[in-house]
Length: 448
Image (cartoon, rainbow, N blue to C red; front, side):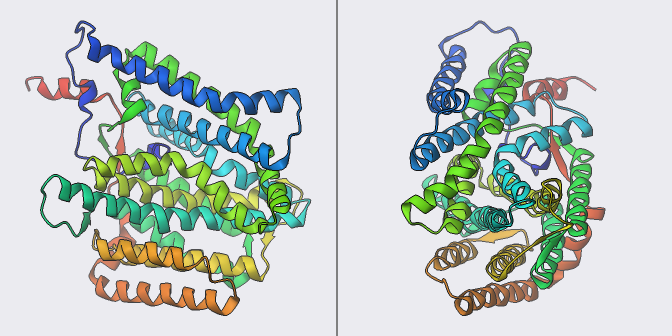
């Protein structure tokens, strides 16, 4: 989720003007509008959350398809609540430990379903395929759809404001830290299809890599947060009111997600059977799309407002999360569910992981120069769409080869940036977001 990556957001140059107003100003219609925004957002999400809570608490068992819609809508709505709270919490959060905890909470909707599948696979091997499906689907959806859409929307937005013929996005130097973390994790993940398993040792290594990532970001340079929509409305409130609402949103959204994750995951499988749809494909694409919808929407809004660099950098951070925290957690959940020390994958699941790893390598290789060109975005999007009619093993291996060939080409073209990218996680400086923009502006205005 774009809003969920609290500790992992790269440098942003634009400040949030909504909160840049004198302290103690008298309320006006403009000042009251944040409360209207918050009320409207709360009512809309509440409409979709309420049915799921009632069905779950009362113990009703509707038709699987109906239940899927009810619980799916609740998960998406709760994800929005959590996204808004996580974005607004950047104003008040400070310190490495606080940022790390906040980041862990913020990824809850994205990983709750997958970790449930991995946990159940510990005592029901049939669910292993669903854990692999959800993990590979969320990864490929983010890079194959989220990344290119943000770049293409940014290009259109630049042309709309008369910025000339834009050919893509230029990333900030600080974004090389995220690319370095993603590149190393992506290369290491090729061990999964080679071994045909996600071993606990691999999982712990990826979790340690994620922990190091949090450490780097939490000790990086501080940048003020940049908020939009409902999160910006939260930022307009007084400190005390904002903190109470943010904590409440965290509590409510977390409770809804934990309450609905299991029935959503189970009914996703049952609905596939009832509708005659491949359950693997349904779990692979529908569940990630539901949990990542807020992230995609917020990132697209940023891009449409001329903040494409911030939007794509946030999605890059999301990809680091998925390729470290998500994959690393699967064998741990599998073990806690009664399984062994490795999550065994069959041939179909090995293909999926290989395809995902190949896509990841290509995505990083083509932007090593910190330039995300329009042609690269179209290529990622095109290959993402092409994968759906390819169902046989030879066809999917050919697609892996295409990804690999483009990745090699990108590494050759951008070879002078490869060493710097590999060193960046250890030597580079990340940027974290903390503090109230208005307060920071006041401090900057003080005489020295």
